[in-house]
Length: 169
Image (cartoon, rainbow, N blue to C red; front, top):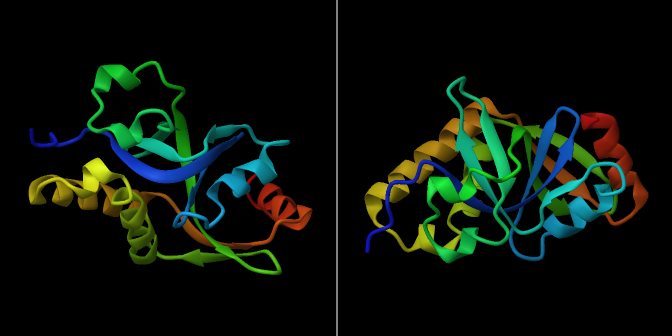
């Protein structure tokens, strides 16, 4: 059975909830997605640890919800995610380990590249036909055009959480 053209997309990512919306963390396995939300958990609740769903809104914004349980299993019916806790997507952060934390703004093209990596780390999306892949890439491009992207260079000490709290609280 072919994967249907999705109205929502899944990403291998983590996310936490701030008063202004969700921070979305991207990176390859072991990059620190779970660590990043763990560093912020005292102040910002964890929304997702391993996977998220993104859903476009009529106003051009994007909502994010936890996909930890279902994203890797295959296509998810819209009805199945209706009861999830949806939060406005505020910012996309690509993670890199570094001794000193810093944030570097990136443009839509680079943000799209990182989102695309996260899209295709979800096996059902990676193993689908060309038409669905085109749809997913177009969705990633739209997210990148509408949501600011950043590279976050971070360590495991409190200075990383302080930087994020100061920048996005």
